[in-house]
Length: 364
Image 1: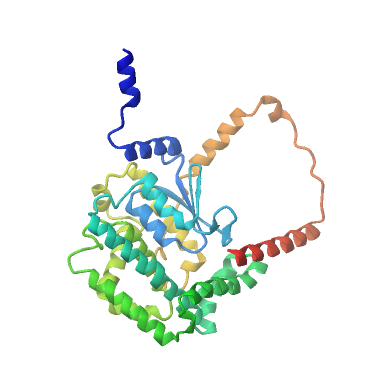
Image 2: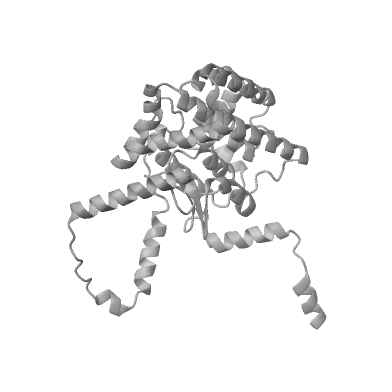
């Protein structure tokens, strides 16, 4: 008997990683993604993170924030998953490790190639895009940056945020000496790197590594979604036929109002109903995002308004808290709040919030 107990206690699971992942999912979602969804908060559309969530079939709730970020995780996007609050650089590694790893079918060679392409996109093309955006003429910057910010941010913040965004972006460009190049030189570089990616894609494959999407496809799609609304790149990218087809294919399959049923039927999603409902709601939230209402935007621009599929969860929580509250507390009437002059309070809060926001923005 003792020997059996010892063997049971010291026996190793067949797949330790899968066991940990299952335990995490049980703990976080309580086996029901409708009650505890992954929540993604974005200021500008988080196309890369959304693409990975959709590729992996994870139901998620999308929120448009009226601020650039928060102190807990820095600049948005931010992922809330159970007791995890994750900044933008840790979202995809977390989803791969704790949720669904869509790269598990890739060979070792493909994984190395995937890392190289990610580095090309994130370390070269993304900074090039920033340099082109802020090298544009004033009226272009106003259309693509200032006007969306004024729609979203409070008045005081919308006045200073474009300048702070430019300061932060140019710091990234300065490290790579991109701030010293003209627009023509930047476009030459972009043409060279997009040409390399064009060669990597071929006639037969829908994605970079065959017929199934991987994490590097999400990274490339997220970049192209932002590049295709840039004033300069919108005329350069259409000449790359495979890249354009790659982008349009993902939009049609994963970002349409009703994803093709064949795509859903082929996937082993845990909850297909919750997945489809979350996509329809996320499309509606993307359509409402001010940065996705630029004239050149192509994704979710005509999404139909739908109800929040996760609203039942909030109603359930409110009912639960009310039931858990002691009867004595329910009967006690709330005390009268002390009245404060609204103008004085609002001015003071706005001033201190503005100073705190500007200091935080410059320090990140």
